[in-house]
Image 1 (cartoon, rainbow, N blue to C red):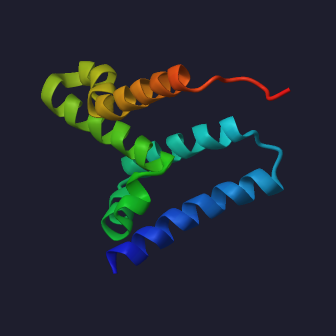
Image 2 (cartoon, one colour; image 1 turned 90 degrees about the vertical axis):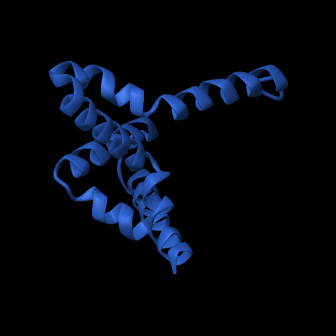
Amino acid sequence: MEYLNAFLCGGILCAIGQILIDRTTLTPARILTGYVVAGVVLSALGLYEPLVRWGGAGATVPLTGFGHLLANGARQAVAEKGWLGVLTGPLGAAAGGITAAVVFGAAAAFLFRPGSKR
């Protein structure tokens, strides 16, 4: 049942993004940014955690999950360090994912030749 819930949750989030791409004039960059901000806002309102419990990886892997991770990192750091945690908490919580993205992006850039095929 966990796999089905993750598939449904992630699929619904992706379907919403696809509908936004197809039916609006929003650019993909704005939609991606909106997803991260939506994850932060929903997490701040306490609405994203129940979705994570139900959808598992289907809720934590998409960009809304990244926003949720940033909000939780800020919340924990503020509890530990005070208001300075607003600046340090989100990056501390997401450091592993950010590092992996940079390392794998650099590796892909070294291994493959970017550019057009003309």
